[in-house]
Amino acid sequence: MSFYLAFAWLALMILLVIVEVITLGLVCIWFAGGALVAAIVAVFGGPWWLQLIVFVAVSTLLLIFTKPVAKKYFTDKIQKTNSEDLIGKKVMVTEVVDNVRATGVAVASGLEWTARSRVDGVTFEKGEIALVEAIEGVKLILVKCPQEHNVDEKEIFQYK
Image 1 (cartoon, one colour):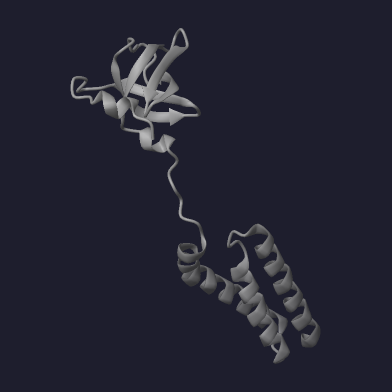
Image 2 (tube, helix red, strand yellow):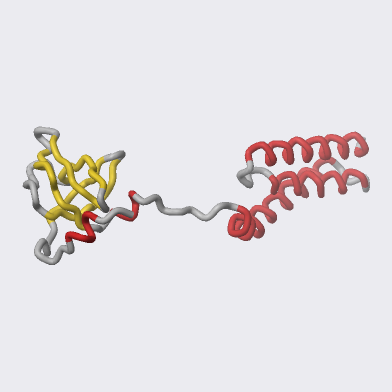
């Protein structure tokens, strides 16, 4: 009986490795390791309940202790997009920003963006300097800039 269970554990391990290769995301490799150790227990005649306990224990230990290391070395570094860099930057309003009328354009790093105010009743006039608080979809969400006179226009209109 243990001999057949060893093949079942090895089949599960192979299936989990195939899923891991297909997903490329460190999803179930930990359980493949648990299945391998459970198969070894089965080869040495361990009862099914011991194999199951070993599978769960080894999988859990692998998950806890090796996942942080594996993620550090085997996953791509998350890079900010250019748009995320705009948060906290000053922009020049080139078309009146009015949420009620659904209008507004601002220039950031030499590119025009649709712009909206964080607060519906607050508008921004053409030529006004605003601060990017967030980006929602393709829209800059603006708030009033406390230091409008300290803006370098070269910084606003430069191309990246």
